Length: 188
Image (cartoon, rainbow, N blue to C red; front, side, top):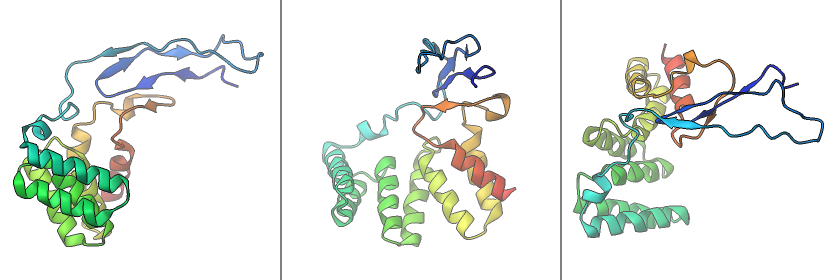
């Protein structure tokens, strides 16, 4: 069944070897495909760790971490309070603005959530998660030009051009480009 399949990995900033499954023994019930070697490409814009979190003062980072913990524990009120504290202490805290937007969106405060996401994009145009969140709002409002602009920005930074890949892709990147492609298709 797998005779015509290839196996490859996809991770931001890496190029994968391709394993052909043609001559693999599958009679034993399990198949060892072997090792897939990935090689680092050049630096990928927008997909490196942001130093912005580490630039934040200690009190802002502490509030941010408490907000993440509260969010993990589903205590949205405490999370919101901590993220608001983090951005009050350090207004350039991109990740805190994004997390605040997520909490506000969860609490159905769309205008405030959109403002928080927009603030995050104004601070760091290469931090893509708020662009995807804003894409949701643009799609919901049927604002096709805005949706196209937001998703074009995301896809311009996509290190893997899916149009050139044939077959299945195992994408290990935590950011979901598939949703951006979906929104982009709707906008078009």
